[in-house]
Image (tube, rainbow, N blue to C red; front, side):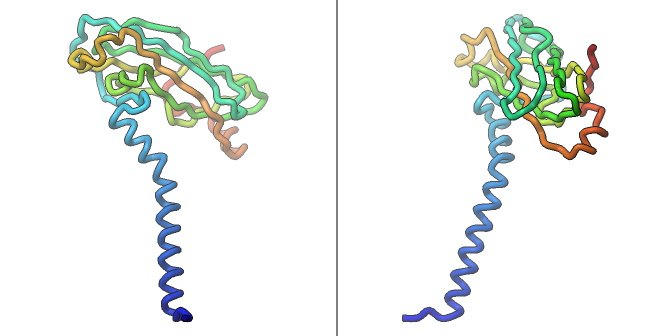
Amino acid sequence: MARSPDANRRTALMLGGVAATMAGASFAAVPLYRLFCQVTGYGGTTQRADAAPAAAAARIITVRFDASVSGNGLPWTFMPVERRVQVRVGEERLAFYRATNNAREATTGTATFNVTPFKAGPYFNKIACFCFSEQTLAAGQSIEMPVSFFVDPAILDDPNLADVDTITLSYTFFRVRTNPGAARNAAALTVPSRATN
């Protein structure tokens, strides 16, 4: 039995709506997943804070710094200035990562991050950092980028974290494709930094 034109039109509209919904969900998946990770600390995602607590606790945790560059063509050397620091729980600390553009032209990168062990993510708070911001370096330019952080004193009340005496903060830089004119004109970083020779 032949379907009426109205039935065919309704079916086409329903299929189009399903396709549009699926496309919208795929675009929303990345920011929603990032939000989920930030709220829960899943996968070693750190938390954000405006300031460190007023007082630091006696417990000391070693924070190690790790750096890598993705294999997607970003011609940078990227490393922590210090490999590790010892911090008291609740104490605000400032660390720097150094990036050098080894190319003969300006290039742009952006960094993602996580901490290990993953269960420490909800307790590692960053006050300021260079992650998820595009950083453009001129040919041969080197800079030092800061990250300000503290370990939340709430970690002291979590028996699951009693065995954690070392937390590793890892950053990975990825290349961002930009138009050449924008790269030439973007000399300033999006976070306070210090140029190095």
